[in-house]
Image 1 (spheres, rainbow, N blue to C red):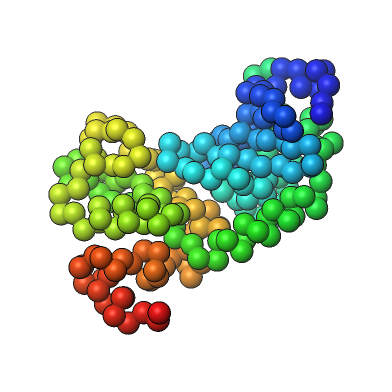
Image 2: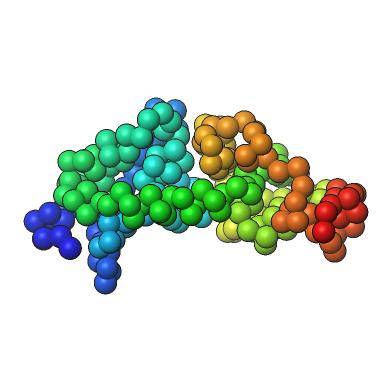
Length: 224
């Protein structure tokens, strides 16, 4: 796909049968650097796996979605705002050879599919440890994640040691406030709660086998 000269000194370089992968990122004045891995496919598709936090599972973001996820808002200037690391320096994508494989049609189709899939969306939520009072992030993208959060929320003595993503203690550092404000809303990263990302009850986050009042009321009144 690319010559050795074009890829020389790019950090995180990996080669696949139909793609190359490099380290990338996007910098927000408010949130700092959001780092990820950019895959450039031979068909012209660009997909980014985000690594902004240890629990972030956004693995197939378009460049525009990654730009928004990092906290950058406004017009689509991702070619200027998303950078790769070369010789220890941040270099905007437009100054690299990577864009020569970019195809708008391939990425546009992918973005449309993702937008349709995100119509039913649950933003990230936080639960406070009853011991150290630190807040821990819970992602609610899948049925399993919704159930894990729901059960943790019901617990009167939830502690950091019960966090489901990785082993932590009350001594583990809490997310900084600026990062907490980014809860995954597809409309805008710093959303404080809107009809796009706040769910007031659906079959994904309410459970037939749960006897809590919230679930019982929903199941009794929900449409089949």
